[in-house]
Length: 180
Picture 1 (cartoon, rainbow, N blue to C red):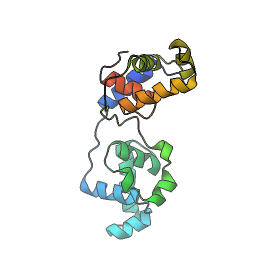
Picture 2 (cartoon, rainbow, N blue to C red):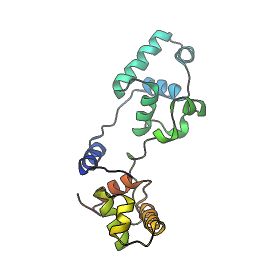
Picture 3 (cartoon, rainbow, N blue to C red):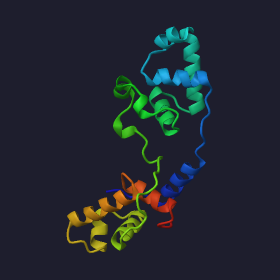
Picture 4 (tube, helix red, strand yellow):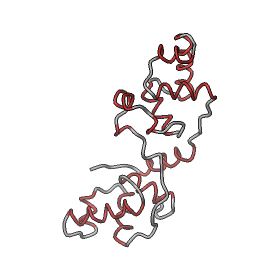
């Protein structure tokens, strides 16, 4: 399955806490919007009544500000920073630059629906935080089969409003359910 160290979880939490919001001026937001729509540099230049070289320089400045080297990474960072929404990106641009598996989900930690976990769900989360696989957890917690193991896994994810094991552990740490 996967083995992830405690250092990774700590670094992920530090990244969540220390993430700085990037401030943009209105013209940069406008340029970012056109880039999200999938327009090319010449098309943007016509729309903004500027030269293509001017737009190219502004785009490079955006790349520097976001510390990226491609439009794909620029858009992903802008989504992460909640400057633009994934819904506002044109389908053509999504298909060209973004894949659904690249959309950042681990950064957005939502408030759990319920912090009350059953004893098995709590133990499951605790073992996940210690980098055990589901197969190992199944043996440790004496589940009858993998189906039961997966049932508790999905119940725990649902209660913590997480999409995967990493998010569940991050939510557990953030809300003090478990400690590293």
